[in-house]
Image 1 (tube, rainbow, N blue to C red):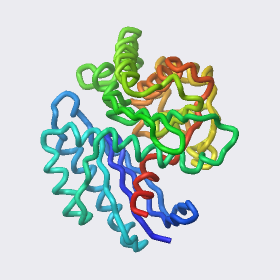
Image 2 (cartoon, one colour; image 1 turned 60 degrees about the vertical axis):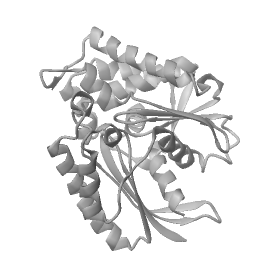
Image 3 (cartoon, rainbow, N blue to C red; image 1 turned 135 degrees about the vertical axis):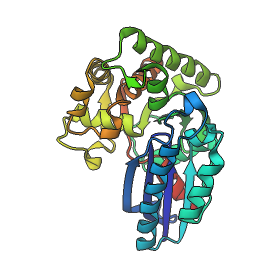
Image 4 (tube, rainbow, N blue to C red; image 1 turned 90 degrees about the vertical axis):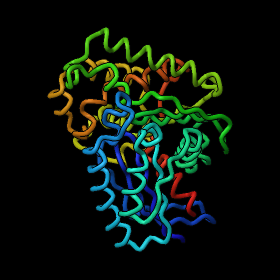
Length: 313
């Protein structure tokens, strides 16, 4: 066993996994898995820069994570940064801050690398399942980007596109600094049009329609699963490997897009940091399912974070 620590810093959240990994058996045993919504990508789509308050929220989470990593005595640490920090002009400020706090330099990875980590994390434990047809299409709907990966035991094709729940919300659903409550039909249509263009782009290199099993990752998808199941609170065990039929994804998406901030916040399993962006995230998933004709989505709690951990093992 090798004790490893993996950090995934995305546009909306920063997550930590401390685990014991055994490459010989393919077993990854969680010791600590946690998430903080820091909204690092706040305003990046508009300004091209990481906001000072977003950086401070992220550095505060890094200090919390440094204490956890020290407590567990992890032998190896890898910090991977994704969409927002790829796009920002002042990403050097972000890199210096992380290095000072954690002692490692964040790797600002490409969309293709992000896709490969996501695929490994999501499918490693699905490989032996005979009830899931191949190939898999793994879809990681993040805050700033969405990764599409098609493969079986290994990645066949991957593509990252700049469509995510935060980016779509800020681009189309925010006016005069406030999120529409609820969005208008025209605003929702603008999000959908952006997503459709992104799907066209993804299909240039990834055979989306050849997939036989759709696997959905990240907070938008897992939150939809919690709503579908009517969970009284977020429950990772109930969500992991759950399945959501297409009709339920459509119903829930319409409900979220037609509800107010207060109504979304009142959903028991809703994380406060997702209240304003969940509608756009759900719409991304719905558009993907309609594009490929998916009857359901298999939800995975294991994703890029687990892929990063395996890369250390």
